[in-house]
Image 1: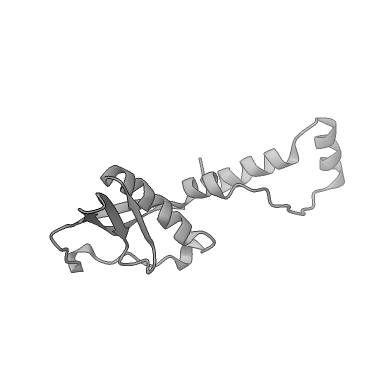
Image 2: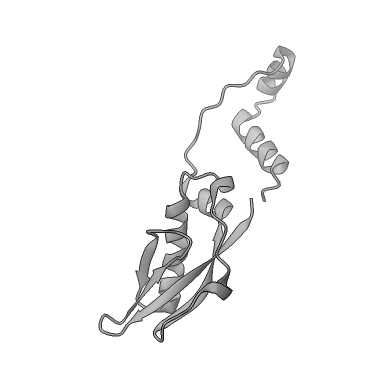
Amino acid sequence: MAKYYYPAIFERDEEAKTYTVTFPDLQGCITQGENLEDASEMAKEAVGVYFDGIREKDFPAPVDVENLTMKKNQVLMLVEFDKTAYDRKYNSKAVKKTLTIPQWLNDLAVDSKINFSKVLQKALMKECNVK
């Protein structure tokens, strides 16, 4: 899994003293924050919510920032989205899996008091190059 960078338009609302954030690539993905730092954090979360339940292969390609034009009160920033970090934080519910192993290996593991779930998780993370 990789990190993705999506251009975000941060627009200052002088009356409300907040920043509204929109994404040219992610229709309907909108958030806001009290300042640029807050708005930036909210933007990362908004991208995560937008992509929740969508496979990475279906993520849209980011638009070329050279093709975007800003208004006076707008700032363009790239927002980083780390799918692995997001999933670890928000999508960690346990999923039951049925698998088969040879009886002799099962007996050996049970006798050794090995936690099957923990071993499988570690092995899958290693196999998927997740740290």
